Each structure stands twice: as structure tokens, then as C-alpha cells.
Image (cartoon, helix red, strand yellow):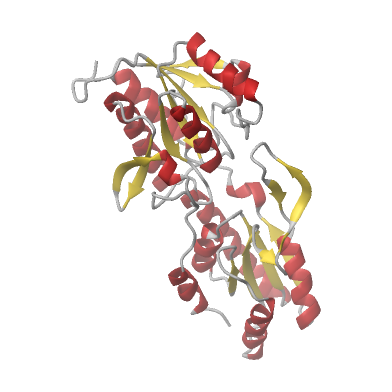
Length: 351
């Protein structure tokens, strides 16, 4: 038993899962959960492929050897899925039966709004759950940052840096489509850091006429190339551009294509040769940055300590440089949008 923080609960075995889209930093969380739990005399069971693993009864024991060497690895060693166990009533029953079968006294759910939404419902039904915020889009409320976001914006920034040289060489406008379903945190941060000449995000209304005017102003002063960053969830003419009409278990359509739509419109209105680059899953891949490794580690440790304290129904979060906790239901109540101050900062460099 850990003398620094003795358990005041009857928890002997916990489960841990990762749900939703993958991102750099998940493995540091898993590693920290296992190491901290073992110090407290708690067994850890890994649930494969998110909530799907509780339905299919795919559970594996995790020990120090299981998490050795995973700190620098992207993705998640447990696998993930966008399974919603409440879409089919029988699945939620099966999930609870699996927890009982493996004698899981508590559960640590690592995920975004959808994954934590399921965690909240389980908590309301008597399951002891602790949440760890994970969204590459950085749009969960009540936490300043989520791990994976820093890695994503660094990848996007490097891509924009590289696109500057080829755009300049060919006198082109290049539209860079970035992740961001409901909010434009990645597009905003990567766009500012990479020196984009216009940034479009879902959080505010976007006027193509204004974008075109800024590009023309830039070209009029002798700059014959431009970079435009756009989040995939941006509405053009009040329409979200999608790849197809199918939806996942949480009702989300597959986004993609808004960059191509905007590029065609820019070229039509200006006559400037315009190309599109879609970074897509490149933003999710690869090793986490130092910031994300450390944040994931801190989140994982604090999540286990929440279990030890009996702080169920809560999520760990970052405020300033301090790891705090908040009720899961408060964190998922509404997305954290990009405020107007960021838009003002970016607009200084337009045109």
C-alpha cells in the first residue's frame, strides 16, 4: 500500500479504457495509471477498444512490464473505438456484467465528450467512474488544455511552414484543412504559429467575401502566394461539408472536403491558382510532445488518486499549471469554443 496516499475506499481492482479518436499522449496516461495504482496496491485491467471491450468482454491485465517503453509511443496500446453502449440497451447491461465478472471496483475512462458522456451515465447508474479528458480538438470545458492538442498543433504548424515554400515558388494559394469538428482550436493555434494569412473556424461566422478581399489585398502589395487554414467543421454557405451521410454511434457525420470547396471558390473569385492540403490523421499520429507526455502523466496519476479518495463522477483537469478536478457532467455540458480574443490576434496578420 502507498503510504503517501492510503486508500480510503474498498477498491482493489480498476479498469482503464481509451475511447473515441486516438491522439498522442494516451499511452503516457495509461502508463501513469498503472504505475500509480500498483503503488497503492491496486490491480489494473485494460479494456480493449474503448466501451466496445466491455461489451465483447475483451479485458487484459496490465502490470509494469505491460506499460514499459510506451511513454513515447503515439496512439493507444489498448486500442479505441467510437462505441456507444447506450445505443443498444443490451450493450449497457452486458458492460455492467463484464465489470462484475472481472471484479472491477472502479473504472477510469479516458476520452472526450462522447466517451465521458457514457461514463457519466454509468456513474448515475451506480458505477464508480473517474474521467480523464482526451480530445485532440481541445474543446472540452473546464480544462485549459487536453493532451494531444500540443502534438497536433506542432504537426500542423510544421506542415504550414513547409507549405509556405512551395506556395511561394508557384505563386499559389494553398488551403490547409485541419481537424476541428465543433471548434477551431487547432486551426487557430497552428495558423497563428505557422503564419497563415487567413484562418477560418466553426466558432464564428465566416464570410468568403472577406477572405477573398484579404487575399487580394495581400497580392496587391506584392505577395503572390497565401496560406489559408480552415477547420474541417467550418460551415460554408451555412452548410457543413461531409464525406458521406453515414453517422457513428454518437450521431457524428464524417467530416472532410471543406478545404477543397473553399479552394475552388477562392480560385473562381480571384483567378489565383489554388490548391488544397488535408492533413487528416497525420495530426493524430506519431510521438507525443514533451508537454503532452507530462500532461498525460499528471492526469493519469491524479485519476488514480481520485479513485483512492472516492472522488467518483469527477474528471481531472488542468487549470493554469495545476491539476484539479471537476464533475464530469459539468465538463461535458457544452464545448469550449475559441473566444473572440484569439480571432482578434489572428486578424492582425491578415492581408
